[in-house]
Length: 453
Image (cartoon, rainbow, N blue to C red; front, side, top):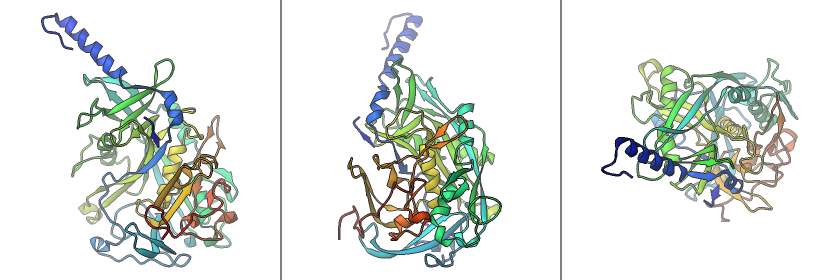
């Protein structure tokens, strides 16, 4: 995360308009920052709670059912009951640790996308892409700057390792499918084939491009603070938009029930472009967020979440959870450490596979770069967050594509969070696809804040 950081009476209408224009341009220029400052920024992903209101563990009464978790490595449940959402399965692992309140805990339930590894079944999941264009408004309410995915960018996304088969050390397939197969290698049947050749345990994304949407970002937030900035190159051209985090969330997600089509998520849901059974991506281009109303707290480059909507008679009045992510494509050279093109998106998609409802708690873990000292202390199964801070340990992989080299982030594997030693994953690894990124476990068990008991 980056922590750096006239209206004249008595003149003609023509001159008055000119004065407003000049002041408006000056105000917009006051929002411009040099793109070179991003070289010292740390791009991060955060955990959005926008339109999330369900506690999926420890509150099964609200669903009228009881979840039945098997032990890690044994029979698993078919997923969380009483919700209308994408295919998911649940399990539990056992490791000593402490919960968020410092209470001792050794059983850690989790839910993941698709079917359990022991099933040997392939799950096909629709993965709609909703391109979103951002229009930054000036003080006069008119569009000052426009940022959005063009046709070539969308084509690059469709040809990326998220959807296109590539070879990995454990077989060929889509990035997230092979990641899953690597982290649960010990739970696959002996005859389960490695490649996606029509048999065995796979979780396959099926992409479709949906209707593009637009958000218009006002000049000021509801509290009067600056709602946006733009980073410009040496020629003064805008190359990256930075938007206030809370303002962005209110513009992306529907706010009322029943919701309307005034936001990209609401419009896509009403149009049927995304459904509760999908993993939906709202794709932006060079659009990041800053936290706490301060551009020095920049730059959030993606998050995964779900939009919670009430049930209907058609679905038996089950709460509807639309699993989705906001991800920004990044042009090369904006950030250090190789963060570019699909780095944010790969991070969010991998975390969605491993934690679709953003509630998979784990023992507290600490990930620290041994040379720079940067790190994360968390207690959740967020596979990208472990690695995003490891600047000197290959946080990003490179995968050649058609005319473009892609840069997905390396991910931590499930055994790392379960504190399993040795790792039962493919090649005894704790990370994917670069097995050398994580070579050891976090210290543990740790108290909240990653302090020793």
